[in-house]
Amino acid sequence: MLAEYLLFHFGTVEEILPTAAIRPAGMVDALDFAVRTPAHFAAHRVARGLDLGCAVGRSAFEMSRTCDEVIGIDFSHAFIEAAEALRGGRCLDYPRLEEAGITSRLEARIPRGAVPERVRFQQGDAMALPADLGAFDRVHAANLLCRLSRPQLLLERLPGLVKSGGELVLATPCTWLEAYTPPENWPQAGTFDWLKSCLSGDFELVRQTDEAFLIRETARKFQWTSSLVTVWRRRTS
Image (cartoon, rainbow, N blue to C red; front, side, top):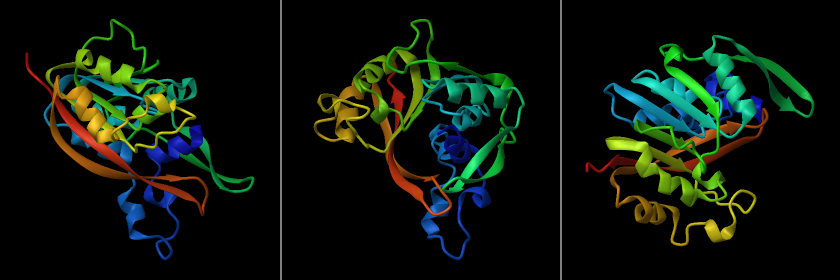
């Protein structure tokens, strides 16, 4: 899983995709998901950013271009250790699965233009964030909600995490599964309507869109998924 996510976050077109002769055009459009979701924030510079469910850190590094401080939080110790290693300047060698037991070796490194000294990573639970985390100008959570056992807990915490006038970007493929979330905690009227119901009191919906993403499993097997992206602005008090 760690290797798969390093490729998902940091792999190049050539490293992820099969040869151009056999791939559908939509595969190219679905690359760089961890770059495209934080791009929904405004372009101006702000003080603090938070990336929840940061995995191996690509979106946090992208946010560092326009945030003076970025905190990336993920439940996985392995993901956080990898993100911290990259932040410290290491190139991470990892295996790319081709088929069966056959692998090839690749390297992950932070993208050009990122400012690693502005970023720090910590292990944590998005449903039980530290009380002293503070408030942020930008909060990003991509493909996280439908992997939480009690996603409502995060939604209830969001108004306290986003500063007045601040931005919130949520992305979710809406793949609600019992393995992650008990059915009684699934949205009953659809994910978008659920988000509007939970957030509209404290946030103004700026826009709703879709972002496709592609995860390479082997040289011949790929996951293509469409994620619902909603962009919100914290109402001023």
